[in-house]
Length: 286
Image: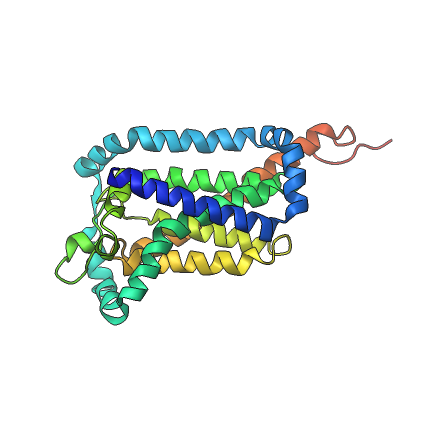
């Protein structure tokens, strides 16, 4: 079995098991039963934002290599500006806290925990009777990937493990060399600003906080996992602190815009369906 197939098989098994357990424990059997009976209608209702996300993901997969070439030729070369700004923070993080146990935890969180963190909200919010939250999530994901792809093209920068290898170790690959086969398929050495692991994790955590009344058990789990992923991106030597700050800003902006887009569309649809509203938005007099 190839390294890539081995990692993907292990990832699929562990994440599927975690999703099953979390669905039963957090979403609950009643909501899962209702989702099963009403899945076709709910999926049809989110078809537009879902198609938008798929389109962004396809564009990212197809155009990544070409855009990487564009970035190499014309992108802003900010590697040394980032290093000058924050210095040896990532090196300090590794030197201060690196142990085999900590490395195993953050490596597992970066790969397995991250995929679970990003995947579970789709099940959780699709199980809600109203589609607004799942629509916002899909729009926020699409914005993260879309804006992130643009920034990857505009900014050409390498991560700390590539810039200062004498001080920063690629701990993810030291812990499990097989992970290199997986990350090599989805990451490029110059794809560091912003950190999409950070932006998507913070996006999920933000939604978890905003929807804490619907899923109170999910909120602390999501926040803990998201924080762990954020730290892991630096501890493992993959991203700079600057990338994390940029990813956090991207996440918060994406969540904000997702609410504006989805809620704005809902308000416009409601206004169009309301015969008592005039074109100016005021009720007509009788």
